[in-house]
Image 1: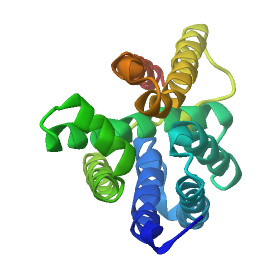
Image 2: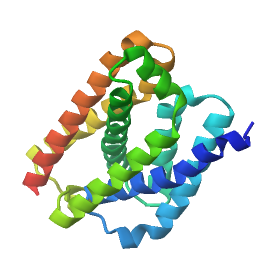
Image 3: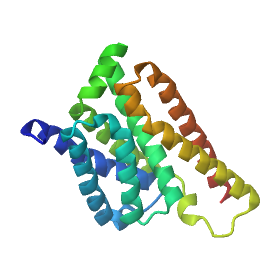
Image 4: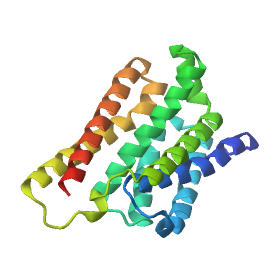
Length: 219
């Protein structure tokens, strides 16, 4: 049941989700002004999803439910194609988790048990931290014109080598999403598997970035 104790956690979502949408768009060089209404609609959906996860006490499903609804928002509101949406989710969610976990690890001076406790129970400060880093990175990428353009510029006819790279890219992204979905479960139930799953997610993100860069060069 939602109570006043959840209000700070509820409000922090209004910072986190717009920043994630903005970063997702900027990474793929998409014009933010064209997506103001989708960002607002997607934020409304994700804020309420987060509130329900907390009030129903099923936060251990957060890395399963939130990416799924984020995907639906990209498909319905942003009109982004399915595989493109998977890439956007893979990169932005893993980056966000990396920032959050790094902050938690530093705050508890790398004490593993304390890290798990903080990660399971604290959301407000970490959310503000992630949102700030998302906006900072987005501003840097816009200023220096970093990012990938192959998503929006990909033609219907692809060269064999390009198609091969894209298939590897999509496979890496899909596998990464599957591993990403296990992160919250490992934090709450499979503590001994957390590092293994985290390393797998980061490794797959590296493959995604590598193949994204190769796809960019082929355009």
